Length: 259
Image 1 (cartoon, helix red, strand yellow):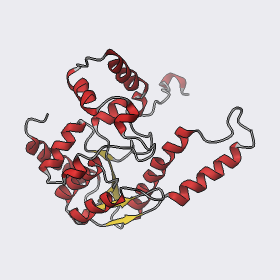
Image 2: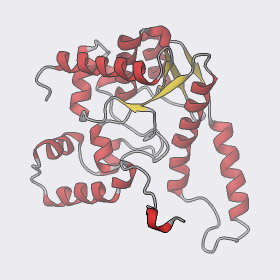
Image 3: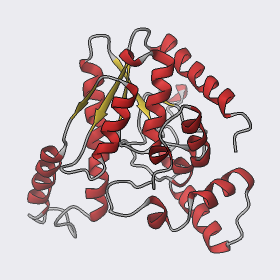
Image 4: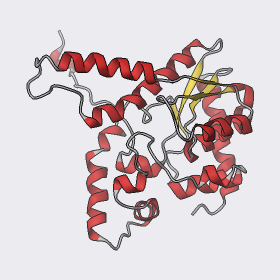
């Protein structure tokens, strides 16, 4: 647990202000609003740091989003400018176009998109929307990443989807610490303690990964986990997904190889 959530909140706000002073004085912060705790806390911190007029919230349902009311509630509560961009037509169009080509059999063993391909496509479309809107703003925009440390540790995000962004605010805070910040910010409990879900698979995060965030957070912070099977699973997920956290590998060309 955070020793002093109020002090941490102030440090996060200072970080945001420093980032924009160096990387976009006058630019707006653009954030995808899912209706969950992470995007709600990020949006609230951005408002505190920059003022409501410099925070742009983007709601991006894929067709009908059952909890869209939560997304609408947070932007109304914060009073930030916002728009809704439904990605369903884009998603359906891309799936149809790719499946049409794959069905021709040019790629051996692949005749249609896999389930994981379909699950990860919406987050990548959403990130494209965020950057397009950011670039369209008169003063420019910077896209806020909303992933927390717990998700990052096990790779529970989509590469070049919700794992992307220009700057990250919560990447060093575990799930329970994000909840503490939400409480200090005065956000409604039904948002900060909402059962986390990716909104893609139809499962809660914890059902999908097979352990609770409380267990994961404790293991990240202390290295303690009584269940060896869960410990092994967390270690495996962390190891396999490290590529999401690292910069793109680049071939190194030595000066000796140049004329």
